[in-house]
Image 1 (cartoon, rainbow, N blue to C red):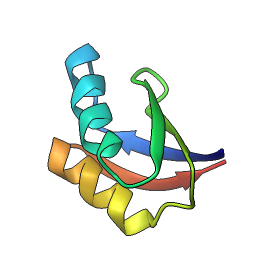
Image 2: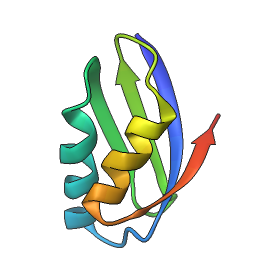
Image 3: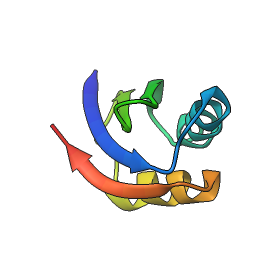
Image 4: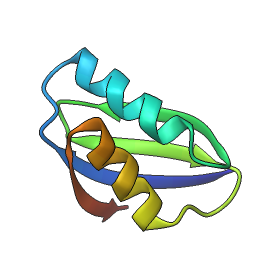
Length: 71
């Protein structure tokens, strides 16, 4: 399993976390999505490497701002 971390801004509640989780979960290979609203972080566990542009598109589709990959 590969872990990918991303910074996402604009989230403020559990509904925000659910929206981001739903959008990212449909990407091929994604096994698990953990959203920390307070820290503005999203941790994605996937079976394969993810294209950053795909994650960006999913986050933006949910209505939030993708700030980039974090370690």
